[in-house]
Length: 314
Image (cartoon, rainbow, N blue to C red; front, side):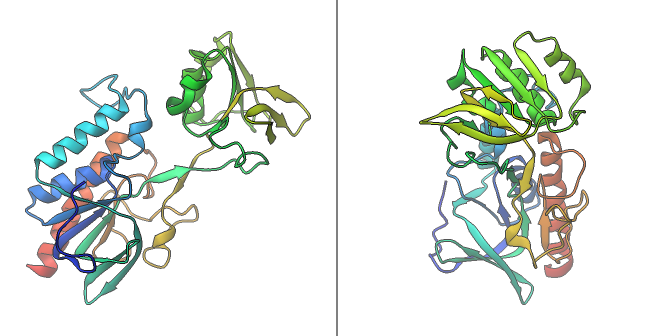
């Protein structure tokens, strides 16, 4: 990514907009901001990162691009933004303060980026299961991304833990690779789509365990079993945890209003409780978190930021 050359401790005093995060929401916001003739910079903590979409093996519901690989789609978004002249900076935001109607964003390298507006698009991360052995065997049999790591378990036995669409999709994906897949859900009913549940029920190598609560992940050098609270022990080589997402909003406590789950309270405009601070993508309160809604969020938030600047600065 391109580092802005204006100096370490004082970057972009004339920025109209700082976008935090370069997933679909952030890149969409940046493109729309450039088209609105705003001076915009995108900050991303991972070099050439395009968000969680890069972990998706296949995206089937992005209109016009059925079956596209998630990584390729993210790279297409990134190329589009760069061709529009969007500037990027590799770094980690650590704090947000507003002084005299200017947002000051403290970076991990000790610098400060100043901008009239901010669009926060940092996304969400995988929730932890919270059982013994999970941290110990992370990367050694415990995974949070079946698409990323599934190939390592070809011909082996695995367990997928969770009951939502992600867990169901992971189990279906792994069923084509693994000798045996256990789908472990703590409740009797699944939250995910019934059609996917039916597909899994028809798979001979998938065993669905409901009302089953994980107690411990055990192993030696790598995972060897998943123990359940009812005393059963499932002999597996890998445990794929898919129990939801955690919004990356700890930095925003005291900056904007959050709901009980930690998501930023905002509608489709991206407007938050803090003037000039907008959000887009998985960090905000909404019913559907998909690539298409993230892209829409970015466009809406950039439009809101442009209107805010026009009203308050021009």
